[in-house]
Length: 79
Image (tube, rainbow, N blue to C red; front, side):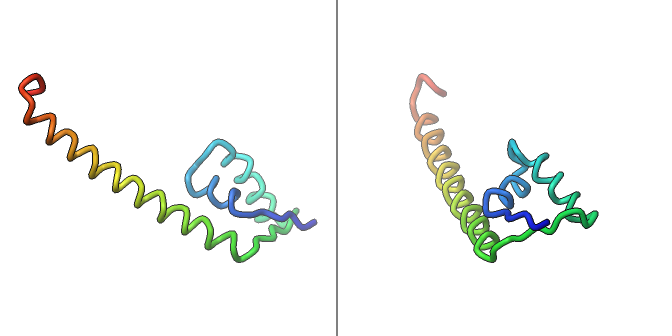
């Protein structure tokens, strides 16, 4: 039996998200030969782009947080 999986399947596994256990069970079934996983090529490129985008957002957040902490360090109430 063929089971189609897409981007969210890959992200669940890669990020160990809420449904990763169910995704892992599907992987186990595929490894045992009980099912065939069918994964469109875009389902590998989309998660990569998502991860890169999240990394950039988190980098900006870290930079902004450091800037704010630096600014607070110059205020008497926070020294």
